[in-house]
Length: 187
Image (cartoon, rainbow, N blue to C red; front, side, top):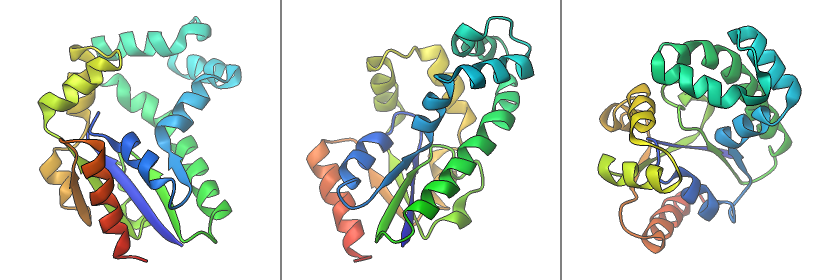
């Protein structure tokens, strides 16, 4: 099994990349695990209690408001969520250990120091103005984009830890060609 980590800055096209790559092997998405957690009442109650939020039914929107007021609130959330995501990541790798390629979409792969967990790391890159445009198109706002973007390492710093850099500023056909060309190195 070749464990391939996929990372990149906010709205760089990581999810699009894994949609392309899923034809080559199973895909783990950290973001999907987090979304799944927030749909579970037990998790919402747990995180509400830990963060002292009264209304667990709207905990996600209340957390976003707290982050907009105080970005240091991120650390508290990460201490709760990251271990749960990591546990699911290891479980996923174990289940798919007999596959040729297993892909892991992890936005904070480098920031979380997970580089040693992967055989190959792909960095999906796009200029900030394009990423902001993509983020807004999905319903996000500029203020929250800026907060999340500052949370991540710079492209230059992330790239140092990655085996391949894939620029995603054109179209999906070019992205697909570039990704599949990289995989040919490992077949």
